[in-house]
Image (cartoon, rainbow, N blue to C red; front, side, top):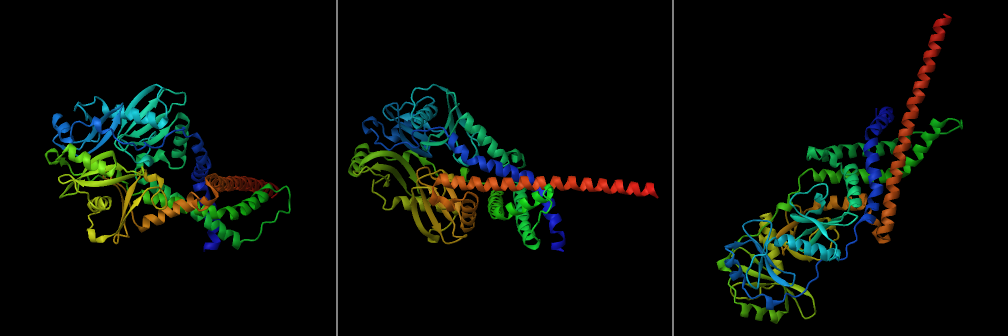
Length: 495
């Protein structure tokens, strides 16, 4: 049954997936090229430097009370134009207000001004005029979901390349940088590779991709099967272009089929995992802190800080039953570390980062503390926690249940970066090694890109040859049908 129909199935399904595979391979070939069109950004992060404490004349409590703020969700210290401000998130709003730590005055349009400050720092350009500053609260064509961070500001510079820099003000982060050329390539890749033109379908878009990847995988496997059950195609007539094309398709396909299976399986697996919406961007555990509970003895507080080093930043965290100052300190070795001081006593909490990370993870997961296996700080992207997650540093909280789930939480913001369990790890490794060829990392990024492009190009060539073969067969069939028809007419005439 299978052997009898495999040729027909292979040919029919090949025609169905020909255009999708052409779109995927063509965009896959051009994807590494996109990196060459990235805008040149001088600084990828904001350097750590001590806050000028002489400019912090008002306690946090005084500054908040002066501005009628009764409770806060989060806060930081930022320096802007030589002045120190309390950057405060309150009333469940996602845009902070800026209170001058010297005189308690609110900075008008403070968040927008700080966004401009950050974007100029990242670009390393304080002169180029800015044409527009826009608050972005939703992902879209120009700022896709892969960037993860919201809300952000889009700061547009008056340059020939139309440079736009997206910054997250509360995280002091550059989320994304794009110019007109990169935007054009991104739109092309999104349409041809991720099929963004089907976004209106919601999760059904990924169902379509999974089905087509499954069909493409079938074509590759059936092609291998056909190769081994059929005899070698011999071309005895050099003028027979159809047989030449068939032999060429047979030879190229058997060599390329391995990469075809790698691409289609990992791509389909990746799309399947995306069917379930990713809601992590909305995850936040940050209980409001009443202002009256923020006891602040400036002399005692600054004396304590000076014992430990220089203050780089300050926040306050609510761990349910206790409030702590979350202080980022630059020590004598010029290293940055985070400490937790009890708001009432200023007593340092031992292993504060681990304890707060566990509190956050338990809040997100509803797990018990006894289920925690380990808590570890992650300072760089790699392994299961890739660059796509954007946030660093984070704390990895490992549990012993629900597929050995682990929660990566950002203690500086209180946000969940990502939740991963064993099955997610398998998908991540599949996509990294089978789709993006990270198994060649030891050879360098350039070499890896070249190998990936060659593999995608080979698949493109196989599809083109297959289409040529299909249309030649159709033409051959029509010619033979016409000959039979003419012969039939002759026989009728003779009789």
